[in-house]
Length: 322
Image (tube, rainbow, N blue to C red; front, side, top):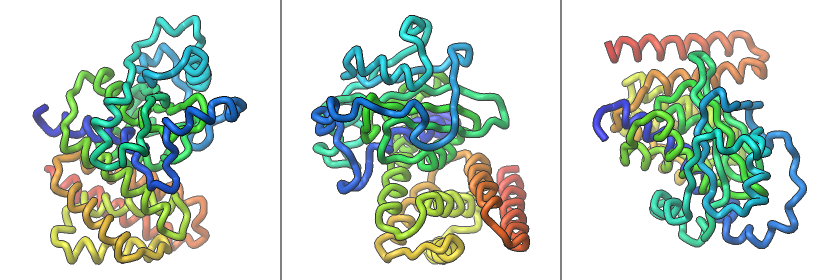
């Protein structure tokens, strides 16, 4: 695994690996949820949250299915993904094992939280330039679409469609690991372990922040994207500069951070800034968050300031890499 492009690939796939790493209070164990299978049979066919993603076999997607799915559970997952059982043999598929989950996640999540069965699954396809990152989830009860998107952007991925699904509500650990494998197969790129580690760290940290901070989850995700964009500008080199940026971002998104929260964010940003990532992609993802805020901002002056800020970032990035 050599070169920055392979490092970028890593993060992308890792991104999805991290959904598993949630705080103990909210992380559902897939092993524990075996007992809930009979209780949670009735699920909506609409996405739990995220975008309205449609992927067809013409998009040449890759599937990563939980290796412990029963036949009925697999049919349910395929239904969420829009795949007819009769067409299943026309898709490229890999299977994720529980051993693989532990391989990628034991450093971040207690083993008992990961569970003993791999059930959650993912389908991913590359999209046309300008499509952006679109993610929808079915029966994944911890990681949000925004968390996936941020981590994927850290990997340098700008245009992809992703569907994550479980047969009933799950933490999503197998699907996250599966995204790593599926994307690797889809692109033919090997993963860089350092970037995978950083992606897992990002998802875990974001999830923990969303649990500890009294605020909207989307604001937390937007704050993380914003801070990564500032790192991308190359203006934040010292610990003091990063700490000041964290304080500024918390105020901007009206989030009250504890000292522990600030320490987690600082550690994450310090790790990311030392990796060879596609910072232009990261800044672009931050702009997407800013665009989402536009519909809720009543003060045009505030919006203009945000637009000017991100335009300045992009100009700085282009100059930095030229």
